[in-house]
Image (cartoon, rainbow, N blue to C red):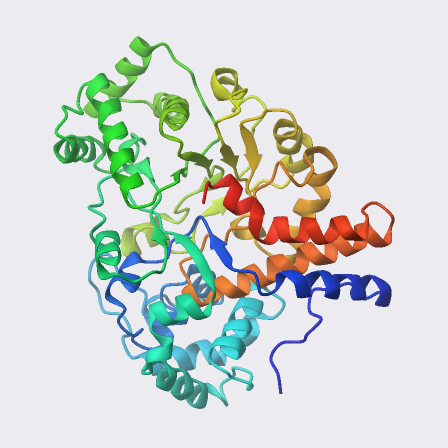
Length: 468
């Protein structure tokens, strides 16, 4: 019995479904462009087999373990590493059995779509995951992982990935990217510049991070001028390893365009650890504008990912560290928050600023009108908690009327879960084709135009927006 149905996510009306099918057939096999994500470059550098099914699908994937945790299953029992080195489950089969016994928790979620897609199309499973099938499915996947066709590079090629971007701190030496480049392998794995650790005064060890930035660049990064120059030097270094974008995960969308003296004073307060919360936010906001100015110089696309209350649970943060499923969406203002940045550089036609949101109420009221007029501004796709069929559909319905298709940037998967990449792109392509089919069937888009737009959304817009 197949895990997937051929017409999943298509309209139920027969005529509209036929149009969606025809559109999808033209984009289903297009190469995957993955311009923003969090897969580990070490996988591609060393090309070692994945250790076991649990380590591939469960332990590293916060989409998976947060759902299980919400039902009282401990992170330790799922093999999630403790920050204090405390004991956790290490037996992959035991973790898998626990996952399989609770697979029903994922019914109707995007995770279920992604997992079933990977189980069927990557590993050839036709049996639904359950307590009764736990050992058989574990053994099947584990056996596959021992074969050459399931190494990271082999899967990269099988997934038809044209290019994938990882995300690294300015303090990263990019050793894995260097190893990939020196290996002679032709898979295109590039980096992206994520400077939060040396931009956010509220990050633990901020002053020490700035000193390390200076040591890496040979500049005195504890001076304002040296600090900015150090960023320019590291951005250039990242470009040597393929970077076409920087990425900024701030709590708010606030931007500032402060006089240089005022910005320098805030910087020095940050180094001393005496910034108030308001001053730290102002400094982060100013640095977005500085990063945009640097993008005008070096061509990197500027991505802003605001609006997440990171690590909401203090006990989980203390025990397990960051990124353990407790990042929660918040309300976000864009009209006022982005104005200083847009006043400074928003009319620059050579600059691309891609803004994401976790606050869907801003789609039609704020983001689409902003992107629909400022040449530098583009809208990132439905993101994170809204990376779902319903979320993608809402994004198109609420932004297209004002921003059109061409002030958006296609799709990116933003994932750590390697085997979910083709699944996520397939979902996006199906949802977009369903939406376009509805526009055709209701007389708002000519059918020949729909075929052009489908390829734009699946492939061309991401390449153009991220300069790939």
